[in-house]
Length: 190
Length: 134
Image (cartoon, rainbow over the protein chains, first blue to last red):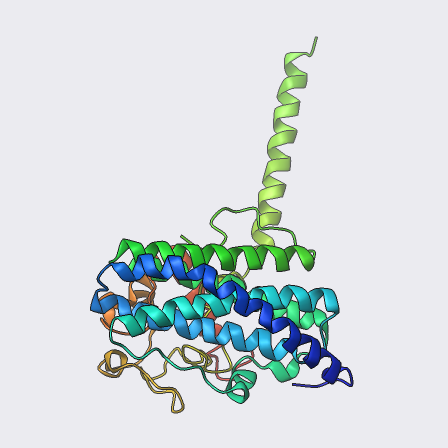
């Protein structure tokens, strides 16, 4: 990733704001508790792990982009909110796996995510927004596919909640980019 | 009052215009691979990219590639158990229900719409061309 002279200031702001995300983590506890209360079928663990990998990637994308110095203060503020959501999703999913006796999948390194997502090619705020828009739409679609594979309705409910968050992120980013909303229904698949 | 002849003439003109419109539509029809690219980005882009491994393996060259053979990607045991190569027919089977074809794999997708599957496969073929141009 190309780092700009404003990186240090951006990083300081980013780290200062990151605490806000942690504050919201408690809000997800109730949702996880409800899902945990039900027995988790072995087949569902695999679905949750794939979703967790998706959240790790989203967190890394927002963290790396947030530290890049490419984002204006307004966009950075929004990115931090979305980052917080993804961190809460991660925590919910990891808790489900752990409660079921599994080992939650670990995130890859920032270097790996930078290579995987070709973050080094990002040069402008528009580039970052375009990437985030693609990732959020893809994530919402992925969750729809995963919901259909779940056997436990409580976990499906949690996934639907996460999917709705991703859809809200996509809508916000898509509007920010000035891209018209698709006219055909089922924006994220069916 | 519009005469019968005038109404008939209007119908003929309208039919001609419709014909022109449909003709233009077919001449400027969207290439399946191009249409498939948009679907791919929406349906697959959460986990996959063409050029790089992410949550799923990269798709460049996937058509004709031996299943579970990208060297630097850690496949699930379920995928490793499959033999053969990714043909359009096997990709169609895969996209119609990943857990039916490879129970226990890490991908969860069942795309019921056959036309959408074909468009995605058209795009995957385009990124599997020898020159890898698309």
